[in-house]
Length: 572
Image (tube, rainbow, N blue to C red; front, top):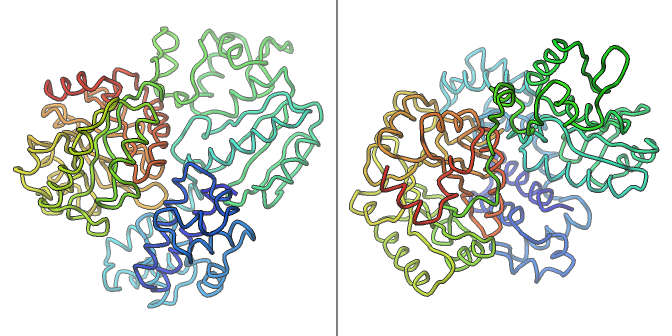
């Protein structure tokens, strides 16, 4: 059982407990447990096999939680979760899919309006009942209606990290079957899109039935939805659906190109084929009835006079023209990253000490880091006021004075408050080696107010970077209303950097705006926002986002040495 699966039980339990009005500290304990489990570098299933004592060595995991983990691993169930799912209608849980409608608001419409389904919620929002609830209003009702429209048009989407974990495991297991020659994920997951609606896997095999039987019996699969001679559709435990296609060796490259997409990219490729008297489909490249290419993607692109184009760029955003002119970017790689400038410790809401985060960074071959715990506004995270922050910096200084092989900066993640002031005074910020300014609260303020807050931070001489600029949480919360053209112009003028936050639920900046930051000449910083030692491993998702934006090594500030990075800051 994957760590993410076990973590999901506790996330779901926390959501249902919040809807049920349980003690906030109890809810927070389950959410912290979920994060601890998901961030574990080791298998929680292996630890559970060792017994409760092994689990209780994990931060925040006591005897009760350890028992629950063992039950989940051994039975695939959690009785407390089952009881709550019986008590709270599934339609109320579905409401949590609506961006901006968290457990507290879902509980309010359930208890006070007796709403149990999404259809009932839509009717109540349209009639004005939702707006009349305390703490809601017309803006919330409009947001709910917009969210319901989103759900209907786009369906449920899953974070890239979760989708990749499942499809990679299934693909690796299929490759173990003797009858299988090649196997690879396709679709939006292969393009590393930040969320996926479903999954695709392409396989070549001497016997398609053996592959389909293996998939049907895979531990991650709950239902076989359809099965034909060469195609099978299944539903995974997570709810995501997966299509398996078994294709001939001579068509594998064409099928991989076709099913990777995007649709817009493929339209241009097919048009180029037509201009050359060719036809491209999932079976190959044809001149009349003769297949002239199709075994590899490289052959397919060569048939239309193009070099192979990396999947992350296949969105019809100019990649065809770049390929035509031999100007495709040399995209950034994970190995190019030298520093991580956004992480947390036990001083606020992190699970590891200063020394543990430093040692973990060294293990990952990083050359420098910045420890950036929260400022005081983030009370749920035990944020730091000026006195505690200065003491924290002294603690960092003591540790780093005895270090070799890595440099450590004293930083702060400072909130930009709702009144457009910063959460800490300038005399404190000027003492920091590195200051990140962020929006955490008031994300639903009007765009003019949001921009006033961001521009205030950018103009502050002590702010080095805007972190996770929109504040969004993918599949859960929309970002703030931002005029990015104005934001980037101001950042370029004042020498403030922009972050791609690599946490899989953020990936903020998104790919489109990261590309725009590059056009404005703003160096981007890819950071993990790690709250544990294993949280440092999400850097790859930020790199995927940067690749989708067409960023090269030179466009990302923390690919530089520390001296080069500090010169960049001074020059800005």
